[in-house]
Image (cartoon, rainbow, N blue to C red; front, side, top):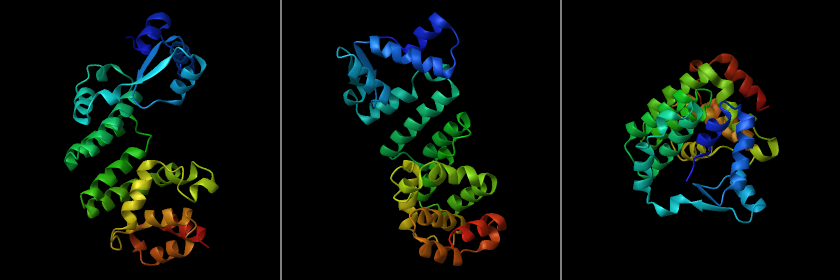
Length: 238
């Protein structure tokens, strides 16, 4: 069994991202077995092109405790790129949720992932969701305040601007983190938490539920939210 990165680095040395992707796919085409987790598009395509190539999902051979233990103790983790570390930690985070690990452990994993991929604002949202799942609404609101005050466009872009309007309206292609957040906020009493309410109003807007979005904004203590951000959003509901 071989890891593609090791083969490519030994053969070619440094490769930019595009060259690495092409070379990696070429190796997939030459493989008889591709050992993977959930199959990616490139793996699926390789098996379609090469009938002798078979994708083997290793996850079905392990239970969730074994998967979590294997990943968190892997000697490969220190030797991969920051983005790969972030991706691995994101997967570890997903498993930590399934294992129902304590709140601080889940937050620690997401914080480390955010450190390695600081431009990906899905990780801070994961932390907000963890706090909400453990009924820490004030802490979640305070954290969301910091993110919206500092990086409003990035936080909103992840969920709403990235996708075409016709798909945004149904949340059909919204990142899973935001769908979970939307579902939690929709069944929670968040009236006294202005930033959680403000973000929920964004969800309603992009579902084209303008009236309820306006009603939420009427009940928000807007004095605690940046005036320009709040007024611009309110204007967009007209």
